[in-house]
Length: 385
Image (tube, rainbow, N blue to C red; front, side):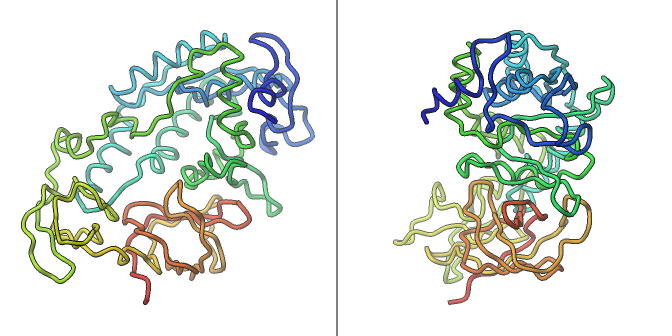
């Protein structure tokens, strides 16, 4: 079925007004605040995180068409978000839903932006979205919903949430492997998951865009965000410097141990990086490790593969320890999951080597598509052979 035909089935005619529903557009059932026995929507109130982009707008559209009483919230995380707030206002006006503008700057700065700078200056490669979701975005969304007397929450993430057979609510991978965002949500706990609707989990991006286009939404052709929302120009080193941080300088160290001279500062580099190193050794090299003193260890191609990881700050959806056993693991959101063994104490052993897992990033462990837990990468060990 084409995206246009599927969107027509799932979304129906232009807003407002009733429309037929497809199975793929139906939100995941909740046991908290309703349960699988209730009809979708049934007049229940839901607060949607609206960013101004196409995904969150269609999320709100789908829920309203399914009978939910939809309100929206947009969070102003930083001065760089003024455009997102304006776009959210436009989307809410076109959708004809109330919009609440939430000031999140101080909390975002404390919990996300400053730790991001500190992590980079320690030679890590942080993923601020993973931290923002539990500590800022979903916290503020839930607080706003509570103040409004709204039980349910919803976002436009490509993932699914289910109550599994053991009674635990878990994030599950999206139907679209190319769009799956379950990795980004792995640190959410039961207090959020039991309230959460993720109506895009069974859909593909072309379908979402076609639904927005058919509804005449201004965001239908909006480009996907590719950079950090608070560093829109992608200049991480410049942002870190402007925030008053001075990351260590040091030297490049060749694969054979030779000192190759100074580099620009560790904020300019990340593990696995091949380009823009300014080093000519006659063979391609990449950043293998960023050393505590600021030196950067280089390696030739082939040396970037890791066989094991050590994790820190491990969490699970229910807060219980992550048991030892067999899992699949992703070390980046867009990475292909690979089989692994977890020892129950923080060590992950890959069944096949994984390219350049970076300290500061997350490793997320799955079983049958369900997020079982994960943690931040503390260290990686080279693959043998």
